[in-house]
Structures are given as C-alpha cells and as structure tokens.
Length: 131
Picture (cartoon, helix red, strand yellow):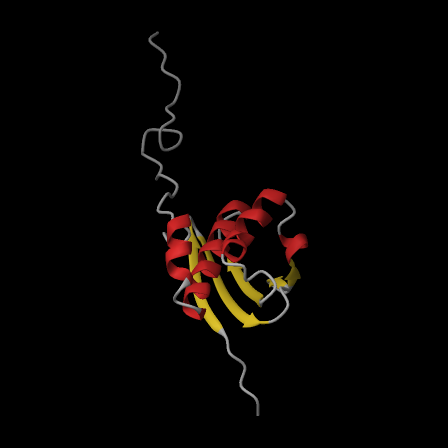
C-alpha cells in the first residue's frame, strides 16, 4: 500500500475554522466537496486565499482539500488562507520567512464585540427622548 504525503493544518478567523490538507498534485482545490470557484464566487476572496501559494510559487504543486465551518464568506476565506499558510510552512520550513513577512501566519484576532445590556447592539443605543 502506497502512503501519500499530506500536510494538515488548521486556520481560524472570526468564528470560522478551516481544516486544510495539502497533497502533492496539480493545483486542484476542493472545499466542503465543492469546487473552489463555486464555493467562493467573489474574485477578491479567491485571490486572498491563493496568495500564500502565489508568493511561494506552489500554485501548481499542491492540491488543497479543506473543510470549512462557522462564520461567513469573508471569515471562511481568511481561515482558509491561514490554514494553507500553516500547511505550506509544514511542507517546507524555508517558506516560513516569506509567509510570515506577508502576514499570513498571524491569526487575525478581530472578532465581533459582545452586545451590552440596555443597548441595541455592542455600541448602538436606543433613541434618547428627553420628553
């Protein structure tokens, strides 16, 4: 039985989690058993996700299979980029400096602020009436 090399990593952003598997291949991307273009219809999201592979010249060297959960479209795209970056570093340590310099290894800590009591949302208040 032949064992294939696989690099597994987890990426996160906001409420989204991406479990990423990088396998040597031709550059195919499957997300939740769907095609890449079908899953991310926005061009900006697709460009952002492929950026780590683009700067390391590994676009046609790896196939990406990922499971995305939680959050929305932008959060999932950010989580996938983070996961791909981490997996690329596992595949080759020399990529670490390049990817880190681009800022893709840092987990984006920004999240939604919690709602406060006596208010509509985190910062928005109910309309004040003096009389």
